[in-house]
View 1: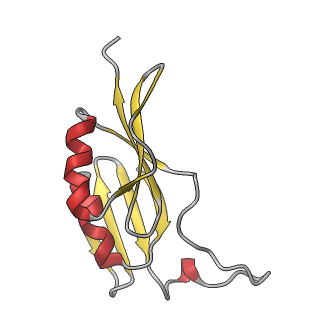
View 2 (view 1 turned 120 degrees about the vertical axis):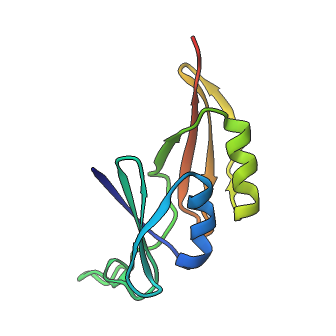
Length: 122
């Protein structure tokens, strides 16, 4: 099983976004932490006040967002995008066609990027 942790501003506001991607809630520890699961992937959503959000020894504070991302392969990119819109998704661009298929970067409600990728049949 692979595990990815994302820092989020509000766990409850993030849940509809990830549920629209096929994740289900496995475990919750208070309001600021939830473990979601999809196939062989666990996604840990850590909100304010969790150990992952505490300042580091050098004083830097972990924040959500950035460019490193989780990639979710989808069967139908357009349908996946439409399912995410009511869950608060923002898209950084229109879908982009590449050598292996088409992809788009969505942002969860905290600004964490999630790449949606539809493989080409070729």
